[in-house]
Amino acid sequence: MQRIEHQNVNVSAGNPRTLNVVLGTWAIMIVTGLIWFFFDDDIANPFREYYLLPWCFVTAVIACIPPAYLYYKGKFDLFHPLIFASWIYIIPAFVVGGVIISFGLSDPYYLSYIQDPQYELPLTLIYISIGYIGLVVGFALPIGRKFGQKIQNTLPKWEWTLKHTWIAGWLLILAGTLVNIIGFVNGLLGFQKFEGVEAFDGVIMFLLTMFFEGYFLLWYALFRTPRKDASYLITFLFLILMIPLRMAIMGNRGSIFVCILPIAFAYVVSGQKVTIKHGFIFGLLMAVGVFIGMIYGTSFRNIKGMETRLAAGDYIGQIGNTLDYISRKDLSLIMQDGGTALADRLENLSSVANVVSNYEKLAPYEKAYGLDNNIVRDAWTSLIPRFLWPEKPLTSDSHAYSDLYFDYEANSFAVTLWGDLLRNFGPWGIPIGMALLGIVLRIIHVSLWQQSEGHQWRSAAYYLVLTQVSYEAFYATLLPSLMRITLVLIVTLYLANLITKRATPSA
Image 1 (cartoon, one colour):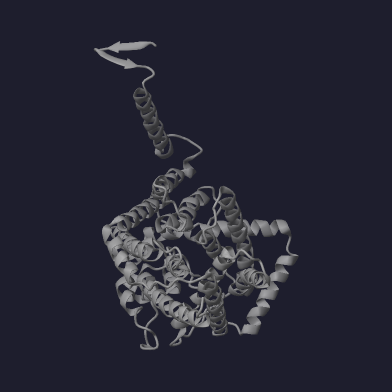
Image 2 (image 1 turned 90 degrees about the vertical axis):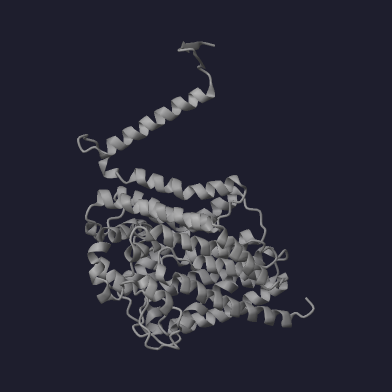
């Protein structure tokens, strides 16, 4: 082997360390050259319009580090709070969203509101990354684990047999369906905005979660039941029927996705072996479901127009009009519209960048819209039920936010936790606020998810609390929402346990 002698240093050309140094040097040179190539205005290149792609890549790497670490440790779980945040929102909304903007697949009108896109769009991705790092740091702090263990030790030790799960599932899904019907008749569900605010509207909204409590438990029971009898078939057909029915009534582009997600969670929790094939099928179902939801939801909203409240019969008539419109429309146009709607819905980077660009300029006007200092103010007012305070002002009004920042009150644009923290506390508020959320997520994970085997009710509670954390919503309403959903779960699961145990005393 050839050796190179230089100043008494003997270096082997085949030494792996030497190879690593060479490759590392070349990598640094290539990255430096690419940065220079993209950002030097004196260089004419056709790729300058793709200036956002390197920042998307960096954000993707940061969002993938915790999942990769947990995979290395043998603890990878799609429903781990840190992994869930990455794949359910950060990567599709901001990483894929950045790619969508770069290639012009979505061009929302408010892109023109961003004063310096080449600076403020990358800055937004930096804020997103810093916020996620704060979330990870908060999750890693021991305070969340200690509180979670204390809560876990105080939880009841209910052990449900498969028979208990069947009964509890049917009780909760039927009660939840009844509450959904009440909410729909009162104009609280679907693509409609009820202008008035009644004393018990908030209670009804949170009781809607009973449907998904029962929905998860019944899917869990299906996956664990070895005998496929008539009751199995009836339950299966009922649950499948609920998916298009909810999509039709809600007029929501994500309805199918919301219904498929708990099925995947129930499959994992039920102890079924998860293979690459299952992952592929799950991903395919998700993609098809989202695409169908985009086509229907967009068509429904275009036909209905505004969010004005309609009588139940008239609203159902809009469903028929939508289905008739889709059936008569050219398939290629349907696919095109679905793709456009999907790109527009996925991409949330531009809406946050709009806040990054304008929050300081619009701060003096927020008081007139009821948005000033909304995190501190709404955090405590949200805790007071409206039936105890009938004159309570609206908390974190999304339509007022849309009016101020997007000049379009009729739509509810994505606020995001990052945008709300930035508006209230400036850049430093993002990592601190997300770290606090990380602590809360660790408490939830330790108290409900760890050692939940054999406690189906605890798995149901974990799923509902985890999905209650909306990264697209106001930070101000996050903690009150978690407290309300926790109270609803305590009451409904206690009653379900009480009734099932009395119904099956010898089980």
